Amino acid sequence: MLVLDVYDIRAILDKVGFQDFFLKLITTLEHDYKNWDHFDKMPRIATHFSYGVLELMPTSDEEYYGYKYVTGHPQNPTFNKTTVMATGQLSTIDTGEPVMISEMTLLTALRTGATSAMAGKYLARKDSKVLCLIGTGAQSEFQSLAFKTQFDIQEIRYFDIDPKAMDKFEKNIASFGFKLTRCHDAKEALKGADIVTTITADKKNQTILTQDMIEKGMFINGVGGDCPGKTEMDKEVLNHASVFIEYLPQTKIEGEIQQMPDDFPTTALHEVIKGERDGRKDATEVTLFDSVGFAIEDFSVLKLVYKLAKEYNIGKKMDMIPVMRDPKNLFESFTK
Ligand SMILES: NC(=O)c1ccc[n+]([C@@H]2O[C@H](COP(=O)([O-])OP(=O)(O)OC[C@H]3O[C@@H](n4cnc5c(N)ncnc54)[C@H](O)[C@@H]3O)[C@@H](O)[C@H]2O)c1
Image (cartoon, rainbow, N blue to C red):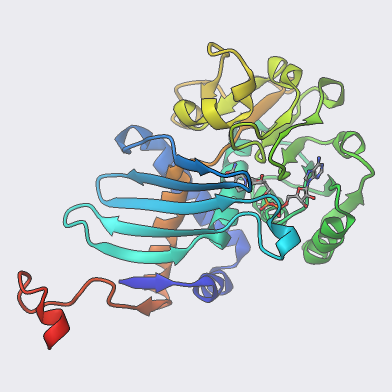
């Protein structure tokens, strides 16, 4: 079985580059979103503790079965650990044999950036130039670089309650050619923005966006609200926007729409990508992607890195399943 650690994922990115990796991943995601009906789907299995959440995210298509194990612990940075940590596996469905185990903390950031940018392709104005980020933690650079592959982003306006997180963001993103505008609060950061990504971490219902901050034609990409009791927007923002979701049975539990009545109208993003429903209708509409992260997105990135790792001969081959001369003689694994 192929094992990919964080250094292997870095080696793949060194070969391919961020720009091309995001473009390949967006193509893979669009392919899998078009193939949505052929996937086995379920809401992720979440185990909640007062500190955070531990989740399993399985899915499969006609060839592979994949799952991600992922955590969300907003207080982790105070213990010098990252908020989101993940690993994942890919198996063939015909024999059930695991073919790859991978780190997925980096892959989660890459796939979340790519999914945001893919949603933006259908839901943001094509002439979007100003990106706003509320939250400049671990995911923020990935969001910026992913959107850059789909839009001519000139300026990033950003705010985080932690000034050190903004210092870190500025240092990391300085060489990528954006005009960087540090703001004093979320309201200032949203001024004149075309695309607004909220990507904060706090285990509570926050009101980071209120309706008075929203301008006509904005695309709101709500990423940080992804657990029961963990949201980022006032209900009025949802009431005044066209809301798009990944997988309704999961989003109803975890997304911003957990605050809304059961019959609150939403559109599934895969239907938009398949051309069955409208995405953005005109330049003044406010569109909102209520992102929680769905298993198919992790499956797409696992499949892509499996292909690239084989192409560039990256990763380690490890016997995680016994190699047997006689498949009924498992005991021989201890005696030979
Ligand atoms: N939807 C998805 O697919 C998806 C994928 C990955 C992560 N996430 C979520 O995105 C969020 C961010 O993840 P991360 O890895 O960047 O976490 P992180 O802890 O590294 O960064 C979060 C940042 O949010 C800031 N913040 C908290 N409250 C704020 C507020 N009121 N205003 C401004 N800034 C605030 C914190 O100071 C921190 O810098 C988490 O909630 C995570 O669960 C969602």
